[in-house]
Length: 206
Image (cartoon, rainbow, N blue to C red):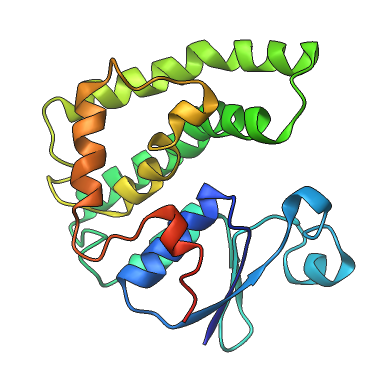
């Protein structure tokens, strides 16, 4: 059985739980409290020297980290990852963009608002992330105005990767009222067969 090291507060972890549940892969979860340094212990650093979750350990002892890399591996051979080379590259394009332009602004703002005291320094950080975060949402809005899903008009791990933090963007101070295409896409993702919400997936080990 696969072992997933995770923290229920992490949307990056939610991505992995969701793809494992959608693909029917049996797994168990070891929850670590990132706020209390449980990913920085010698025991966990021996598993993942980067000290980050999610981390997936395979039955044979191999270890894979980075949420989008895990998504890509777990989706191999399924409908959640296109087999056609250019469409696969488009999926990767969105995965890379999510980690470079979306997550550092929208996800980080959510974390700061939920788990840090709003000191002047933190408020300055939040203000600095506002414009690039809105730019990321605007890019998604333009694309989704003419597309049902992000790649090839079918649900894929690109949608999982972007849904994870977009659907909770308002918790980071990014109102979605002005993004009608994104809100419609969120509903389409949530209507995908087998979809499980973040709260449900937090208890989703089998």
